[in-house]
Image (cartoon, rainbow, N blue to C red):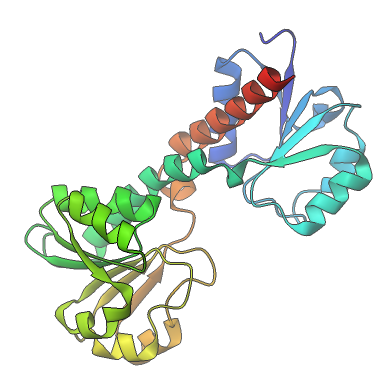
Length: 264
């Protein structure tokens, strides 16, 4: 045990349960929200929904010096923590968690493509919008399965990285001109890039998988009117690989604690 240190893990979904098991394997005592008053650390759900998690009540019950860690924290959550005198850290802001989550997101997206398409991935063309951690994890995996992946990215650096991976690179500004060559598109850009004109230029009956957080990068109403199938695939790590996703949360939290100890 980590010198008697205790985590109170709040929430019971599969990802949160997996995070608790990973913390226990790391040597911490782990309990549920009912023992928050005894906990040195409080692991809050991802995302933190104040309407379902009585945050003010939980944090008021925390012992002095307790540290709370949560994901996708709202301004309201930060205010509640400050009023309760509890330090609150957003582990979802950590770049390593973004990278860890990109892997199950990519695998979950591949599962959607396999389920929704009537052809193999091998030998087919796919337009991938954005080349951050998720785009990179997905692009290389699709290419390994034999897809011809064209990466559309705003920054020249991202396009260069795509080309270094053996993918095609194109400027996002050319999206209108590129669209007619594709009937399968995956978006990772958290901005409206798949506008009605772009969607109209795609091949009839195209499949669009939007991985960007709400509200996504697709005009879903226009996609529906044009006869495309557009899927907003949110929270794929928790849906497709909750054990892996929970372990990633735990690993990130443990890194945060280790860094705090090193600075102390």
